[in-house]
Length: 239
Image 1: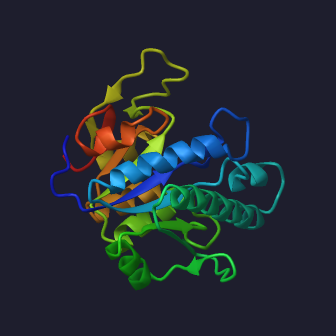
Image 2: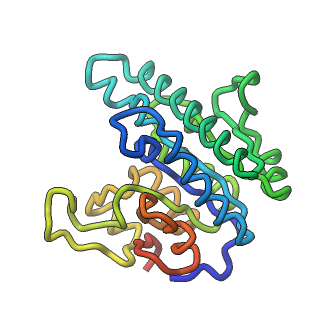
């Protein structure tokens, strides 16, 4: 599928992607490669927003499963997303891409608060905007934060860069016979619990008619190929 009318996209990256080949944390070399991918996409004329998870540093649900208070654990996870956003901002600016970080949890010594109109001005001026700290409240994932920002910023598509190359009918890591979809409807994703994003994020994209494009960000150059209509991907949209 090509995107001839797309002007503005939101790219959602899992925090685990920033680990590269490490077991945890941030791999500066891999983050630098990701920054070059984003730069190449931006040079096609796109306006780009980013949302990055925090699972490479701390995951709220995992903390809660080990006995932590869920709300406290989620706030820790939100702070992890700010660290990832700052790392990506540094990498982007080192390769010449002006970038602003906006956090749903205000920390004015570090980054801007989330202000929609200011974010729109940044995009219009050719800057990349990274939205951090999810929605600023516990019990919501960064998937929900990405869908919310995509709707708020009137993005033409939400691109989810993961370690797999699309949406399958079962987990391809455990089932070698899993079948990948080229396209699938929002309702099928929700009904079959296909684990594209959490249900609230998928429903928000459906209600705002924002297609979700799932692809592998680990494959070098894949972001540009997907935006050009090539590459391997799954598109979640209305039938």
